Structure formats: C-alpha cells, structure tokens
Amino acid sequence: MGNPMKIRAASKDGVTEVKVLISHEMETGQRKDSAGAVVPAWWIKELTAKHNDKIVLTSEIGSSVSKNPYLAFKFKGGAKGDKIVVTWVDNKGDTRTDEAAIA
Image (cartoon, rainbow, N blue to C red; front, side):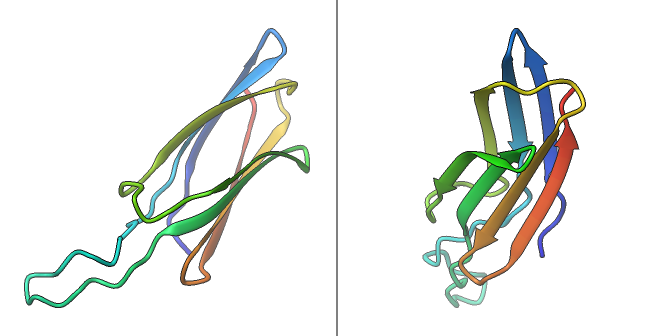
C-alpha cells in the first residue's frame, strides 16, 4: 500500500473539478541504480475515480508516467459534501484507496 493521495475537489455551476496528487515511485524498469543493477519495474496500471459510488473516471496508466503523478479531471454533477473516492492498482498488485469531500 502506497502513501496517501492528496485529493481536492470543488463544484461550480454543476461541474466538479477533481485534482489528485498520487505518491508513487513509477519505475520504468529501464533505470539502473548506483551499483549498475536494473531497478525493477513498478508503476500504477489502473486508476478509478468514483462520485458517490458511481464511476466517473477509469484509466490505464503505463510505465512512461513520471514519479508522483498529478491528475486533474472534470465531470458533470456533484455537490458540496459529496464523496470522491480514488483507487489505484500497480503492476505488483499493491493498491491504494483515498477519499475526499467536494468543497
């Protein structure tokens, strides 16, 4: 399980904007450490966002995304106090779920 994500969500005029900062190393499997050994591949492969248990975003992510990825998206609907839940799964099977309320 990774470190907590930072999630911010705000609704204005019927549209909710969600910003997520994900704490993850996102290794490609092509970099070498100081001893010359290849650093094993380790990246987020799936991400899902839900608004009140309804999926509003699904994505497949690859190894080319940088460390600690930032994601922003908008969807129609959402009201102050509603719950946003973001979940990711990486290529090692680790998973993380965090939530935030819409401001």
